[in-house]
Length: 133
Image 1: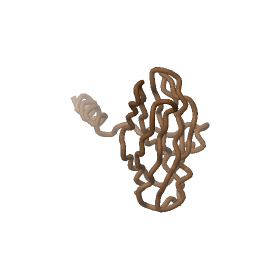
Image 2: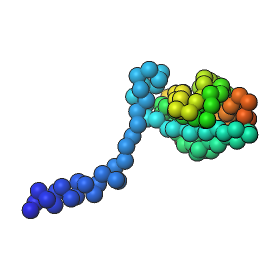
Image 3: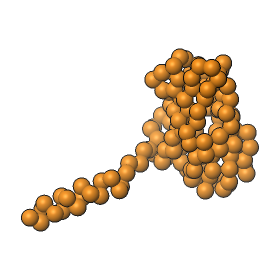
């Protein structure tokens, strides 16, 4: 009976614990906690970035997940922040499978909002924010 109660208790904890993703070895931020930003584009000038404001900590990895109906060039460019913001820069193709691009939040990043531009070639541009806390 005690084994049954322990199993039920542990099963109840599973949804609470959640999963933490770690950046892969080839990301440049190996082992860092991943904060995903989903970038989805469609025809006729429609881009969405979710979440539009992402919270991250110094030392985290930001994963840009870029997905759309046809291959298009993706470009992210840091534009402002309370410190250096070039770490937000990334570029490459987006496609229907969804390509991932990792950038590393510097371990000495200043607290505050870092703005960047997301551009999908031939579709448009958005200006989301990463808040480093």
